[in-house]
Length: 355
Image 1 (tube, rainbow, N blue to C red):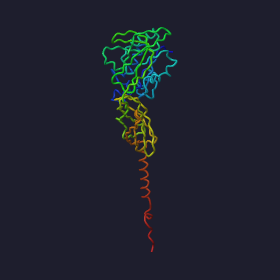
Image 2 (cartoon, helix red, strand yellow):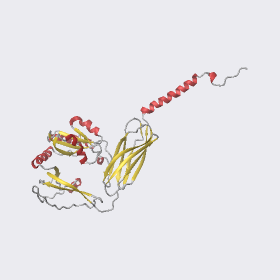
Image 3 (cartoon, rainbow, N blue to C red):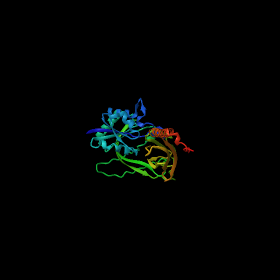
């Protein structure tokens, strides 16, 4: 059994790197200094002394797997439902095979191996339930990436209970309807400005209700369907949905395809969309009968239960079907013409009567 294993969360679509649309390659495959981001993740982890690495892949996972081969293990997150869900996808590969697991974001490749080793050393020294890396900045612009509001007062002895009063500071532009706040009890380790601090944490998540008029409207910004395809292969469909309301909500999307062969439903899943943001939906569609004109209707259900629609159409004319069909038609026509030419002339018109 390995003492330590690493999990790299690498299933993201990179929508924030492509104006809200799914990127042409997974986010961790974007190059830095000539190598994919995930390459540098794996290198720093191995340099820190951790050999077993699990990449959690999802969006266009084949590109990641083809590049790294059997250098790492892979866990598949079929539907992107958050970082906790992604980390849980690696559990079957690590349960009973590693004593401790360190989770890394795949788009954060600039940690130093020394930082990871420092985390491990302090974790082994203090033996907390969980350890988290954090950093203190003097410049508040970095707070946009998430804040750990710390209260260094108070202490607890073994088996002692204590009531701790706390205040949740809700920002003036918080979304009406809800605002998340994390409350943690932790072992404090000092950290100077700009340096990494390591702390053991146990905590809970609080949902604070923020008053205000709540609207959960959606707009379909894009619905991309190829106008025609000439091969028997899955058809890539994508859409981008914009939250024009004033709070986050979960939007579900599906596509209905219809043709002379009947109708079919394509589930695009659901995403939680922050307000004034957009999320991309995508699917690969394989029609049961890949031939003819298909009408595609995108339906998006917003947080208020309103269904929004957008239509598109696609011709599916695979040469594997069209070419043999044309050849058969030509052969039939040639056969008819040949048969007519071989018909005796005396059978073409009425037989003249002899006088």
